Length: 172
Image 1 (cartoon, rainbow, N blue to C red):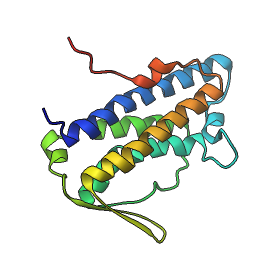
Image 2: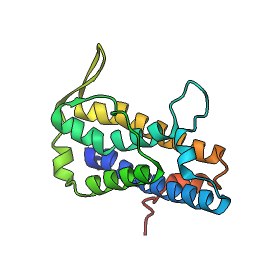
Image 3: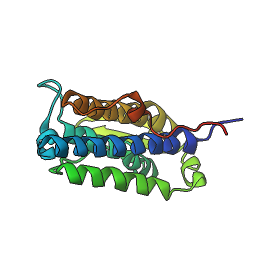
Image 4: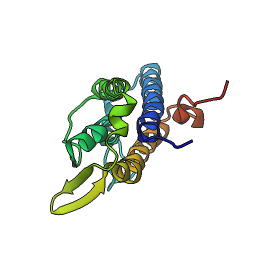
């Protein structure tokens, strides 16, 4: 059986976006329990030259729902700057998931072979939609989801691997 582009991209995005929603909720609960303003987490970095938590979560939405929109449009670039607070980041992730849930498999599978140009500054990377989603957006998506998870762990949020895994497709 061949695996469709929809399953490789949207299916994966939805699983991890659900996990991100879950660990963001646990992060908020932890902050509430410990009397920490969750907006203090928003600017947290693991290292001085890394982008903050806010960017990591924005990039998760951008490289999932935004990547599908970019593939449809034939062009994609870095996410726009954001001033979202913790609640705004939670909404951004929920909105990305809701957007992806509306997609039909044939809509995404029909993107196969479509040209997509990634542009940042003078750099231009030409892709076909399937290569863009599989080798650019999915790795970026997972990198930023993992980094957001790691920042919350660093801040003391009690998370485990299962929190990152999300809802798996277990045979019944």
